[in-house]
Length: 365
Image 1 (tube, helix red, strand yellow):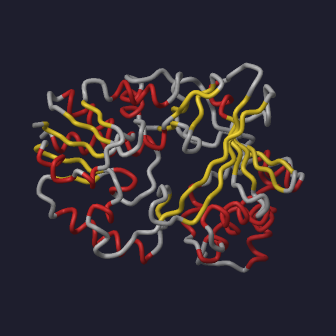
Image 2 (cartoon, rainbow, N blue to C red):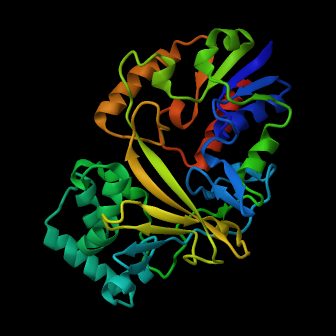
Image 3 (cartoon, rainbow, N blue to C red):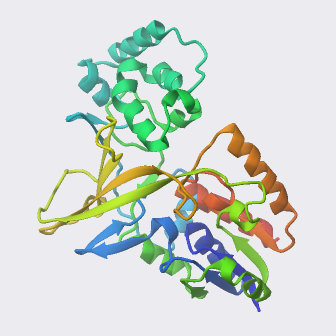
């Protein structure tokens, strides 16, 4: 009899198991995949730590979270400075003075602000009603049409006029020459990859892979006093209210016989063509050397049942549907729900850990 059955060996499940074990609890961690670490899983190809499920850069301003994660890995000093490619023209990201110079030739913050204000006034937008209007209000029509529209519509599979404006608010806008994508105090990639980091978090737990919770639900739940479930919340309740919506991703890996393909870890393709949203060159996350490189082309696709769910579709219908499932979750006797799928929300990694630390403190009171 375990103190905890933890469904999902991703970051949330691994961190929760670690917190419980530090308090003297026993944990059985299961995952339907053949590996631990969930979507932050990294595998070695040609000596390069390849992010199998897309690029993951750890960043936070939460000192407690930073201190916590550094118990399990040493982080390098990688700074995320992606580049945008629009029909062969290159722009720095996030939106900053380098971007404004590349777009308009302006050289001072005042000139950039004046250009954005001019385009904002020409648009006639007073209260933004969707992502398109929000983006134009933030950075003007030129940058919206060049660097936002095509990429975002590929990412979400629908016109920007049908997307909520808050999505674009996550993108920094700076009137200084600063290509660092994140504003957080701490940033980096774990040396040796995320899988090694999660292995360290799970030391002391019993881990079963290729283990589908729903195929053995009654037996597994009988083996534990408590359950943390990090899978899809609608699946747990047999989709009794219907399916929550997601966007999914498809990845194409290539091993290239060249040392350096694009000179940066991430290049976003912001036109509607090509179909992929970005190319990741993994060796640049860890300053890799060697005669070969590995790139991944990332495609955003419509999610269908049976596919891996990545991004919740945040609209009113899905919010109302999730609220119904959340009410059912509150009534569960020995089960708590957590993580990206269990809570139907987009989580940065540091926010995952913040949630785990808070939840673990509550549970252990």
